[in-house]
Length: 324
Image (cartoon, rainbow, N blue to C red; front, side):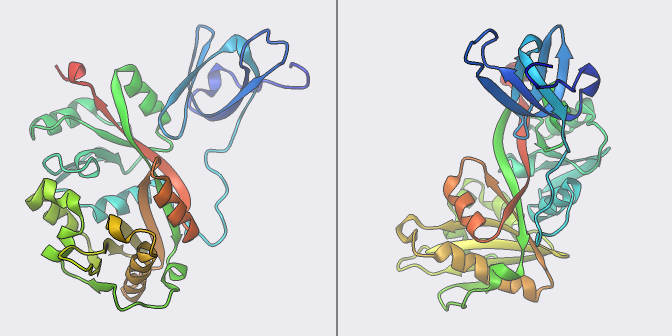
């Protein structure tokens, strides 16, 4: 104990979520502290490693530790939000972005779509068992692709292990959820229409589809009940597009894009509302989406619409040298 601060963690707590306070510089007379929250993934030879929700690792000196405790794995759920665990949302999101080739290897769903989008070309966990790295790597090698994992909150030990093997992190994102009905609570506007078919007009409003036309169309048109919103522009390209997949109680929003010339006009909200109304009609009651953590504008929009963070994920894949 130092000055009323207590260290209540030790090597036996590896694998648990902890909150640690360390001296920024041991011996600093000002006593400046740094707080770190994450999963304790290593404690050896006087050094600690904590892996945060986004997969980044922090290494701390044991001698600098002045306080620490084990904390709950997940924060309390906000009232009004749908209840769901990470595996459920992972499975629903995978079905909303269906890859051309999939297979279950243990508790992991491996997905491949010719390299188009990380989401459709990575393995995600549907259970608690660790991945069979050899089998999963061989599965991807047979398709000419590097192995890749989508690692969610709760998989910090695996992330740390892959980090030590030289697997690089990329594509940090957050999964957000919301009640669906409030999203639909806007006056309908005629300029946004929703259809159940993927059209050439819609594709022209989402440029990423042009990177791999055939593959993109198969992924985008997949899903249990797929809805496409489009707001016509003044020229040949739409002013805005959006996509939603209804899967049981869930409505998954993806590929929402407003043409740069029309941003700031409220079109994104109108597209989301139109899709939400159609999803409600199809029987959904809860909403989910995925947004990159560095997309501040989108996160601000979704927060204003009632979305809240559920969990984080990122991708891990070996470097070129590791694949040789």
